[in-house]
Length: 271
Picture 1: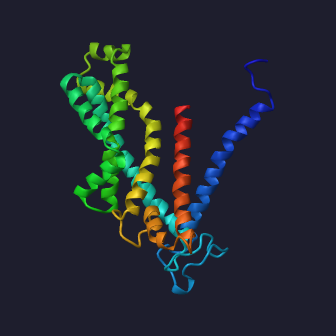
Picture 2: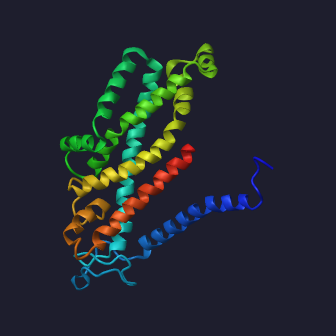
Picture 3: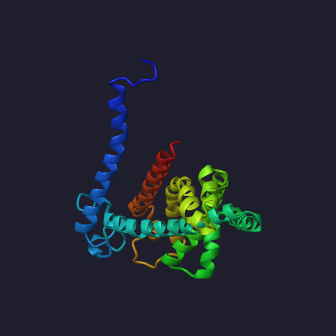
């Protein structure tokens, strides 16, 4: 029948949906297991320096004899936690400001939109580096700078959603029954203006990973021997002709993570 999936097609589609999730869970379990049971990412011996990938060292070793796989796994904690902090900061500031701008309108809305326009007119990486010049180097400051550079997108998106909600019956009813500005803000506008930003959070999380890795590569992040993906690539760039694995595997970790979160964002947004 038209419009109905055949008995063969339906299980196939279900398998296509489950397999990527199952593969991701298995990969995550293996990485967590290696993080707990694997070698110390900061420990190395000179006799094992610059070893190519083998069964003993799956990703090889670096110029200090440290296991690259152990450092890539440890670097995931550093890079991903920093990106999470950055996105939480931008979401936590941009969302309420967007709701506030849409609710108030007038000069307040115009002022906040001017701020968003100024922030959006500067490339995020350049803006983050400019903020970092004021804050100073360090992983915590890098995350703050990246978070501030992403506020404009959340502010704009949430404000536009609030403008669509303004004339909805449940909003007018909330005011009619005596709801105060802040009560309507917290009970109605904020939760209803949040859903469109969820997929953006995941998308900007992948952008934050790229930005933080890039800034750390440039030398403004944590000092060595911190296992951070961008810093690992920077440390291995002088050996790229003779020891390609020093830069290839941290770079591959960045690419795979960014692509995975981008695909997740696309799935959630339904595109």
